[in-house]
Image (cartoon, rainbow, N blue to C red; front, side, top):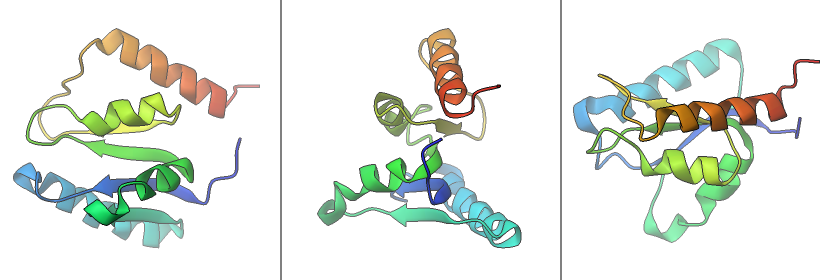
Length: 117
């Protein structure tokens, strides 16, 4: 597996933080990371940093992709496109178009990163 310094990362903003999902996610991840002694990057983006998220993602084992105003996340598909492992975060129900294809793609990524043998 490619060496990655971060166990998990998130790069986004809180303007679309329905039900404080992103805020609660960030608080939980930071607390657990401190307990486990692992590195994470919970990064609030700005327009000046539009290219930074790809570097952060490439240095992460998994990337959190919480839902926005709608039920899905554009970031989830950006992460898949980069060949990385997304984790869709939602509070009520998953909302993925083509769920079978999504699970197949994620399974393939996990198998590539963490082979069973």
